[in-house]
Image (cartoon, rainbow, N blue to C red; front, side, top):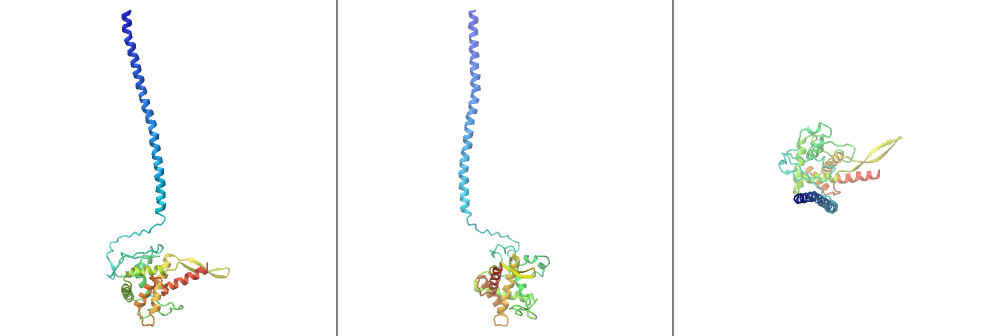
Length: 281
């Protein structure tokens, strides 16, 4: 019996040891899981605080940075970008600063401003015509008949319809502009158009047998048409039946309009139209 008890004792000890080892092994993963659980929230909480700080700093920086936005000018490079007007003046450096006229003032590079009427077939197709050619076409027009400048145009045998004569007048006028201003004459013309384009005009409305004038906004394409027309009319008015040549009068008109000078009849006409429209609001 004694020998049996001695043999049985080691088995119990082994069982207790194995049970204790199993318990320790079972407790060890729980402790690790708890440690992981305690670490994860701390790791998540820290980025939230940092993100909140950086987000607030970014917002404050954006508010300061974009308080005064700067205009962004995007230029498209064309395969004809090396072409110069009359092989003299480049179109690449010309900038249109008026946002409403930017879409309609076409400054695609070309050598001779003559498209043989290709831009006159569709509706609003004239908006795709080069701005220099549009000025040339306005010079070819005939007289108005009833206004102050009636008859003071190149008409009849002079050059009405003769585009080559009008192209020579514009070329010589651009030479004078470059000589006097030391600038690209195409840029000077664009600036003159921006300064002489009216923003507001009047229209006649009839209600109940009573007609009255009402102020209306002018579309960008109409603004461009009026500006180019008034610049051409100013050149005609200053050169008709006078010693001043047509190219000199046109150059003086464009330079005065680019400087927003009231000596320009186009700028004067714009101020008059806007003043009448303001009184008719």
